[in-house]
Structures are given as C-alpha cells and as structure tokens.
Length: 276
Length: 307
Image (cartoon, rainbow over all chains, first blue to last red; front, side, top):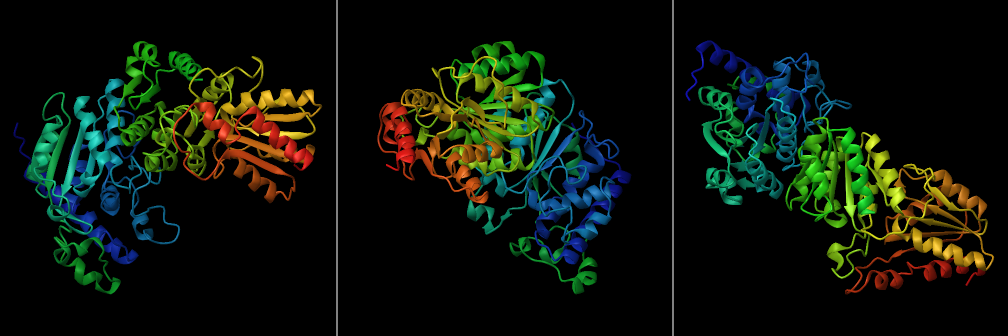
C-alpha cells in the first residue's frame, strides 16, 4: 500500500526536525556533552513518530491505550528530549539545564523523569524485551496501543535483543514495531568490520518478522512505512532505516569520532549555521 | 514450599486479572493448573532469562503485577543487569521466585547452587529479599510482596520442608518471626535451615540451654531492632544460612552489631569462600559446612563454653 504525504506535512516535518537538530547541537555545546552524532541520526525517525504516527497526547501522557515509544538506544537521549520539547511534552527550559548540576535530564532517559519517557534505557539490549512486555499486555487486554522500539545497529550485537526478536515472532505480536537506526557505525569501528549484521533483513525474516527497508532521513519513505503497521497481520514489523550518524551536522557526519566529539561553546554560532 | 507458592498466587490470581506468572521454561508440571485456569495471565518465555526479566518489566509498566519463576541461580545472575535497571531502577512490581535453596540440586554441581543470590539481590535499591523457612512463611510473604509496588526476590526451597509455625502465627515481611524464647543464645536463621535450628534448640533445651530462635525470612529490609534486642538480651548470636558467609545475613548482622557498638560473640554458619566440590546428597553438603542440628549445637556450645 502506497501512502503519499502532502507537501504541507513534509514541510512541517522538515521544520520540526531542523528545530530538533538545532536544539541537540546547542544543548550539547552548552553542556559540553558527547553522543551528539548518535542523537542526530534518529531525529527524522523521531520526528515522523511524534508528529504523525504515535497515538499520544501531551495533555494525557499516561493514557493506558496510548502508543508507546522506547528509545532502546538510550545514548540518543538528547535527540528524544529535543523532539519531546518540539512536540510540547516537556518545557524547553529543561534543555538549558541539561548537563548542569541537579538537571533532571540524564544523557540516557529515565522513566518518570519527564512525561513522554516510557522506559529507562542506557544499557543496550533492554528496550525490546520491555517493549515486548508492553505489546503483550496490550494484546491480552484487547487494547489497541502499539509499541515502537528504536534500536541502534550495534544493539543487535546483544544476545538479549535476539531473545526478544525470536519470542515476538513466535507470539505473532503485530502491534510491536522495531525501527533500526542503521547508521553503520558503532563505538569502536564500522559495523561491517566489528560484527557484520548482514544479511540483516534475512535475520528478521527468519524470525518471522515483516521487514521494510527505508531511507531513515526521507519522510516520503518513513511516513508510509510507519503508517502501515502491521505490514503483515500476525507478524511484528521491523523497519530497517538506513541513516547517517551525525546527520545534519556536516563535520560530524559518518565519523566514528562523532560518538565522542563535543562542540566548544565559542564555536556554537559557526556550527549552528551549518546545521541542515 | 513450591506448592505453597503456587497455591497462594492461584488464590490471588482469581481476584486480580492483572496478576501474571512468567517462567523461563522451568517448574515442570507445577504450573499446569495455573496455566489452565489463567491462560491470559501466564507465559513461558523460553530459556531466555534476560528477556524474561525485561518482559516482566514491560508488563509491570502496563499495570500488571508479575511473578517470575526460575531456578535461583539462573534467575538472579544471568539477568542481573535487567534486574538492576529494568526492575529496581524503575521500581516495578515484579516478584522473582527463585526455585531451590543452595543444595536443592545437590547432584548437579555449582552451576545450580545459589550461593550468592541473596547477597546480590540485597545490594539493589528498592529490592526486598526473602528466604522463608517454612511453607507458612512462603504463603505470608507471597501475600505481602504482592501488596508492595516494588520488586522482590524470594528464594524458596523445593519440597518437603516441614511446617514450623503455628497456623495462627503472624508472619510479616520485614519482621523477624520469633519461634522460641530463651535467654542463653540467640539463633538467627534464614531459609530452610529453620527446621535444623528448631531441632537443635529442642535438643539444647534438654540440657537446660534455652535459645532464642528467630526466623529471619526477610533479609532486606532487615529487622534491625530484633538483632539489637537479641544482642542485648542473650549471651551470643549464631547465624545460620544456606549462602556464602560473604554478603549474607551473618555479614548484615555483624555490620549492625558493629555500628551499634554491641560487643557480643557471633558465629556465622554458612558456606566458605569457595565453590563446593563434587556431587552428593543435600545433607552431605550441608553437614560439610555445619548446616545441621549438630553444627548449630556445636556453635552454641562454643560460645557458652568458650570451646
């Protein structure tokens, strides 16, 4: 099924994504923090989810029938916070306190810290199992909520991830969606050199998942994929989103160092001018 | 004890459709009836303990109260980080039921011996830790943890443990249960050694030695007042536990005595800092470490007679 998105929606999404990217860059510079590139690569995915796909309400964030989103790659926390600010879930002021003594926002999201955070993450390989539990509860309670879990590519090195992948396929949880931020880089090298995931799609197919591959920065591909869930009845869906680590910040794009770099406050204005 | 556990959660599940039971493919035949009566509240996730804990967390985050069963070692160690981050850090109502005391699987080797489970769980904030001493304690503690909205770990022995308590005894989480009164030596027990301790106390009484016997079914939160009282009112303390001496009840008692400035003889009977070698019966291993009525009597006499 093809879903076309309107020019208006496309321009709105691009606008929100740019704001979120600028917030990630400014906040990181002011806080002197790292993991900037990891927060930038999923921004378009997060924007698509929070501005078009998720059935959520910033005025009623605990509604039991809501869709859930788990940022299993917790090191992209700032990306999520920036989108939550843009979406009106949390006040912008919290970003100006980020990295300061006593800030409520840690680099990795913590359940209960602010509205919109559905799970505590930071150690890789926990998010999908928790998401599976949530999806199972929705199914057994005959509720309509869906669960979206964003994994990093390197998170698929974790055995616990595959424990959940196997079981979700077995349980036919078609209200469970995994999105892979497949930026091809991990902490200490390229994915293909450290632990090659390919043939990646085949691994999910073999575990009884429906698979979609998209460009993770093109809303024209992300939105139709995310709107048409489940792709197949009785199967969980994985969206393998090909992304660029550091997307939108040219000097950091596709660099392994992007995981560790920070931006000097004095350079912020110059750097912000390059963000797209 | 395992039967007591299943019967209690069955009663609770009849009242609460949000009570769930998960297993990591263990508990063969024990959960057949539960599964039949509550198919929507039960899941065997397969041999995948990390996922087992994360799923329980996801269910608890969706309003469920989740009991999770596996063998004590596999339940606490393989998924230790999931227990720490997903259950304790998020402070969720997930209740871990560890099947088997230290030598319940005595023929199987140390892979199956929970030697450090209670100590590991005791380190985690928000976690309550229990090792009940008889089936009535199991029942009471299951009911108590279910009322809490925080994680708990209960290590239960397998089967055949005698009932020690009277049916009208009040047993509560966090309060040591007094089994016998006495002014000579205090015996503080966690877990299934309660039967051996009671047997030792009965024998000692015949020799006019009156022991104060306390069941420390709850190791965390620890009943500090009961420890202080025992130290002040008797001539010495013997701690009996099926666990490494490192990190167990004995060490917790020693810490409290030191902090309170109470100078009193203390003997911990437990497992030394080693992996018990070989295979054999449960009693073979327990006797080796003095976890028997004779071992307890010996410790009491040692304090009384400076032997």
